[in-house]
Length: 402
Ligand SMILES: [Zn+2]
Image (cartoon, rainbow, N blue to C red; front, side):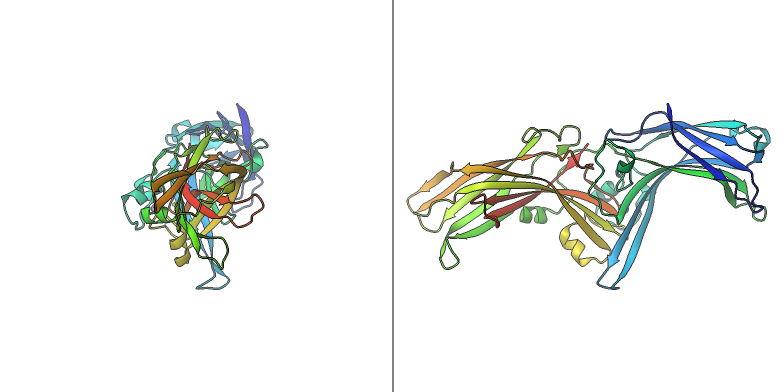
């Protein structure tokens, strides 16, 4: 066991006494890093630097989400903020361990153990705003992962960037406070000393499909049809349709690795020639990218967020970051010919590797009241390696889970 956080806080009662307490927190096991965390156990050691009387000690584990949304349309330059305390757990039965008369003599220490088991589901009071259906409520009541909590800056080995904007944060904290009653209002307690310690939480999530998007939206973005022309002055030589089938989710435990090892997605291509003699297009270059989108709102989101709803709702915002861009050469020559005579068409497929980027701190897909994280696989097909404009581009939501 190693002490992970120590703080010394001065006693700040009304008399500005020189007395003080120290609170030392010792956690039983490391609670940072990529591994899933379900237990936060340890002890708080409270030491008096001078004779100190207290009225209560509270040990809590809390989860908070905070957002800032720029309101550029309604209030130019203004912004709205969202705050949501979705989890509060209290350590019970501390009182029997208090010293007699709640008095700590100089240099005396009081050790209080704490044991918190993180729930996979939040209490129903955590999400009481209006939602479109039970699936949304179910998603909002799952324990969200820590997001943009500065965890990475404290761990040298882990990648620091979790692809979140600075305007959205999910933070879990262990809070310990030694309290005294207010002399004038006995119902009011003031802290003699307190400590707030961030704990990085990476919950286990389920691989559940379909993803957080409407069926219509998924169908629209996962299928693209394009008229092909030799030049802008020519008639179309045919139409090319590309679509992706929903790939399985990417596991945070096995999704890292060499190109092609973790998972592959198939892009299916169909070519309908305008004239029987029009050959299917040659495709030489494929790029694939994983796009992480963080949706955040200043109020509880009623539905699973998507790009279209986000644009029309001034309380919502999104932030996208593209990662792990693969570019590789593929000589698509294996077109299969179907039909005969004047009614001929062609089909083929291109297999695209999908892996998690090892230089980022990847979070599972989640959908909470104020903040949601979704991923999209984006594939572009080019007719040559020097071309800048893709011949065809197709996207598909993809789930990342632990
Ligand atoms: Zn909610």
